[in-house]
Amino acid sequence: MAFSFKKVFSSLQSSPALAQSAVGVDIGRSAVKVVELERNEEAPILKTYGEIQLGPYAEQPVGSVVDFDIELLKKAIVDVLRESGVSARHGTLSLPLSTGFVTVIQIVTPEGEEIASRIPVEARKYVPLPLQEITLDWAPVGAAHTNERGETVQSVLLVALQNESVISFKTLLDHIELPQQPMELAMFSASRALDGAAETVALVDVGAAVSKLYIYESGTLAGIHRFTAGGAQVTTKLAELMSVDVAAAEEIKRSAADADTIANVKRVTTAVFDASLQEIRRIIQQYETSHNVTDVPVVLSGGVVNTGGFEQYVSDVLQRPASRAFPFATVGYPAFMEDVLRDIGPTFMNSLGAALRHVR
Image 1 (cartoon, rainbow, N blue to C red):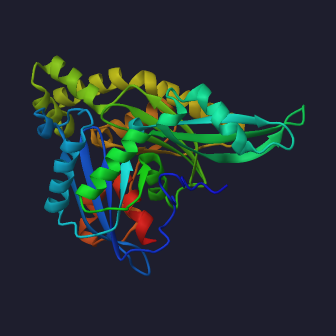
Image 2 (spheres, rainbow, N blue to C red):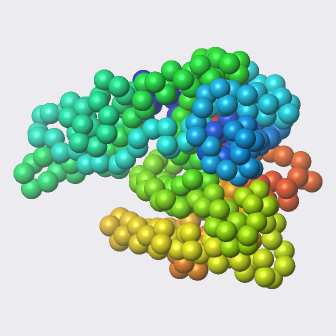
Image 3 (cartoon, rainbow, N blue to C red):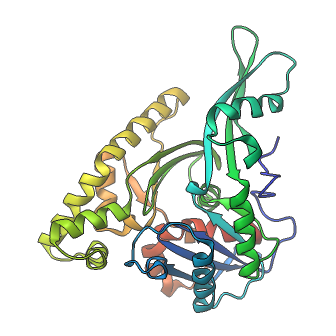
């Protein structure tokens, strides 16, 4: 079957009827980001973009991780769409991984049995909710092979969303005047923004609450791993180390300039991310060995990537080059914006990829 998420998301590729302009809305745990693109024969054109922090809407400091609340999100998204001057009536809502359950599993089927018949049975072993409470979908990953017993072995990407969450986000789309528009998990938005990258890519997405490793093969998600290390932890530990409040620590993390402050940020960043990055290195090396590939490139996305020295730090731990994501390379934009877009690129990976769904 083609990977369609037919039950929830329709197509993960371009919409059947391309829009003249479209907005991608990326809902994160600490901020909402939007990108509006305009369709063009040569390449989509960047119209506008924007970001709004969720902390103040929950009476918390900027950079804080905020619990999901639909009413809070309604206010924040309306504000960022208005302040960014978004006018598109088509769009895609990019949802964080925490709103769903995603894993890659192996399905073994006897000769003559359809793999689809095994999905509900196997899903019960992995999805921690009753099947009647979720919307379940799946897609094959890679080629199937036959084992020594003549059974078919197929890796499958399994995705589940709580029915209540689906209803809530549809209500959100109605509120922001984008009814009947699609939703997708952020990992699929990101894959679209990686267009033109190497055949196999490891994307390290460093979020506010957690970090994720996605491995893509020719644009298709082949592996996913989560790690309990995120930018908010860096901010909290930095506040403790420097005896400042969280808001001040967030600003220091983003704009440290003097040697002592940079050293403090690096010390805290290392304490938060070292163990996770060591595990990421092991997983990538294991993937290369099992798939007989070498030098899988690493791309970095997420707000923490803008922390001074983070790119080199990750490269050192992974023992391979790691480059900042630049999703705007897939669209047209004024030359004078090059430096700004390169600076913010890692944080707009999902919103840009979501917008691309409608315009190409």
